[in-house]
Amino acid sequence: MYLIPGEFEDFISMDCDRRQFIISYLKERGVEAPVISINGKNHIYVKFPRKQYNPIYKIKTVIAHYDRVPNSPGANDNSAAVFSMLEWACKLAASDETHNIRLIFTDGEEMGEEGINQQGAYDIALLFKKLNIVNDDIFVFDCMGRGDIPVVSQSRFPSNLPQKFLQQYSKLEKKACQLLAQSNEGKWFKVPSDYSDNAGFIVNGIPAVAITMLPSNEIEAAIHGEKVKTWQYLHTEKDITATLWPQAFEITQNILQKLAKSRFIIE
Image 1 (cartoon, rainbow, N blue to C red):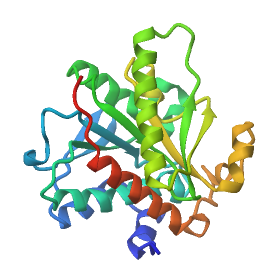
Image 2: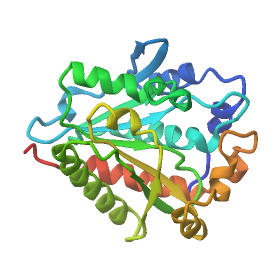
Image 3: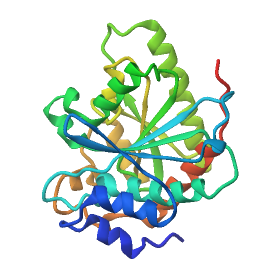
Image 4: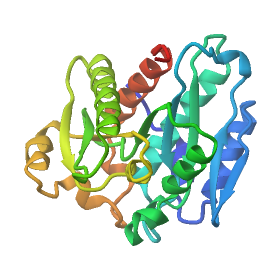
């Protein structure tokens, strides 16, 4: 059984400099993490050794936002995903295996409530377009610390999106569903979502799939659009470690490890 480490409490403390925590955590374990500053937001890029990339396979970009709503500890939104990825990143960096993972911790995601173009991932998507990085498989993780069922957030798209984009997204979503099924003994769901942290990529024409976690007894209500208990904690002072499930961290690690080992040949 996974035990949530004491360092997690340090990360969610109200006076924590979360950017510096992430950089220091990785540096202490021999992992370089430069900051990419765009429009006042400070995104963190995890730098893995070149030998861990093979050009015949697709890059798998993995994203989690590290910012949080003011006055909320943000244990589930989004510290659980970030901390799981910090542990995972250190394992990847120490491995001799090829993984083709591009890992970015984004800043300013919670500002997306002011409009998608304020979302941290929106700036990253614009940078990707500028650099012609448009063929990655992009997986956005959010609120992974509570529950036993991994969920693909089923985006509702505008009717005017190009058919090519819809086809690309469909392929990526299928990969995500297979990944979740393989990571949790076939137990996973799709839940409709009007807005997720992949929205900044979607509006820029870049397919990206959002993944979250829910308790099994909340899935049906979530599918019917109800604001389940897990979501009621978000953006409040109640988003604390006591609401999290150690099992969720184990499942998240399974997903990340499966993703690192997956191989998708460039078409």
